[in-house]
Length: 70
Image: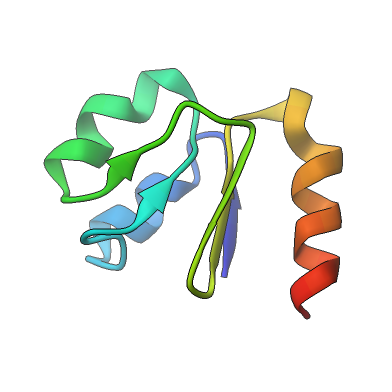
């Protein structure tokens, strides 16, 4: 699974990010932490089968990470 910018909040609301390291837009930090995720201030983070990224500036790295694991 992969999400970028604010999209990791969808995974959080589904209960999929409990104890998972996650990158996302800074504005999502509080809600992600509240959901049990471990917010990482990084462009791209992979934790298990979840790849997340902080925003448009990291889309290239995010896409390359996805291609590595599909």
